[in-house]
Image (cartoon, rainbow, N blue to C red; front, top):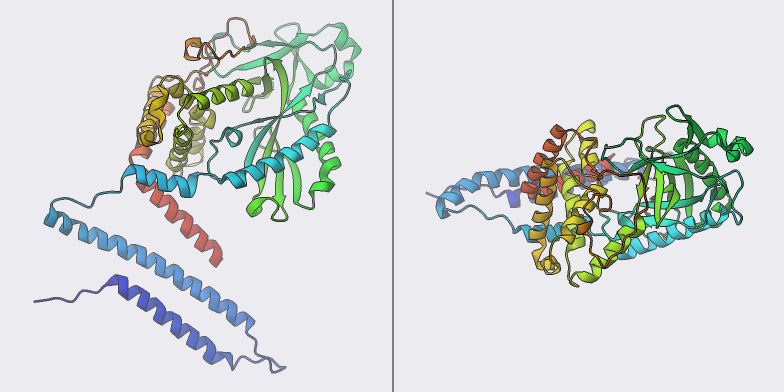
Length: 489
């Protein structure tokens, strides 16, 4: 005996069409009765109500359809398994990764190129205005150039080209001598230093204003330290003056604003007014004051340092960019190395979506972009070039995740250039390093985190990779629902 079953794929579209037709009929029947005093029909509010009603109906239809499809799949899975003995196979992980990469991870080279060109033009004008032709006697000044750093310029940015990092080198006053010193011997953490100078010198007596404004007395020894907070305040005020000078030519295309944001970084915000910058992308530029250290290395104010520590972080952008260029020439033309790093960042972002504020901050702190890039470079330097062909994408991504988890379990991720293992870098690639301190310890990027935190991150990273298809589906559905909700509101 045949039993009739309701076909949900046909029923819900028909129900939606019928409800839409009834709503339209109701609207047009009552339209003639809505007359204003002058005899003209008042169709404005009714049209708005009609559009909102249709959107609400479409939203309800999507939710009901998703629930019905999930329910039908859940009900059909045991029957199919019983009949065929094999459940429905999941799509191949390689195809799923490629599809997600093209739709949600990969950046448009056209949009990224336009964005970088616009940022470079604006920042170039800004630092040109602040440049001093003659080195100042008792004040800081812009050197006149800038250094582009970060993932947007190293071709592994994910999401949207909406954030750029720029180092702005500064000129110290003539005659001021600063010596880098390690603040904690044997600490072995991130490359942090202080910039000290003797307290009683002829220069400090002659330029008392600069010494009182930028140098801070250090009680342990008879010396002064250059205060990063004072340098940041001067840099913020100088950037505001320079922006006021160059603002007019750019304001026809975008509105500009400057703020001193979180982490003591100067944020330059660009909100385009026209289609000159593609798709009206709002961009943020982090302007970071940098003191040249020699050998293309820089010192920047340390983010997250406690008050009174006066710590500076060492940056090596030229050395890392030179290394990336050498690796690019060594790898095959169809290499997947950049795609691996971008997908690793996406696994991190998807795995941290459900975490609360504190756990999410710790998750992003351990798996920072620089930590992921360090693990990625170490794997690139320790594997043959031919294994990075495009067809080995899944295997290399799994290797990268395994190396990252091993580092988490060992509680150590050594800095690529200050890690103490000079044999990792090729002999043909000379990377001269400045002397930051006497007998520096190998720099471990995770020394500040507890073993329990590193174990939790390792476990969640393995969970995120194992359930990546589910996390991708949940992320897409969440974004779709948020978009419909904001349209209705």
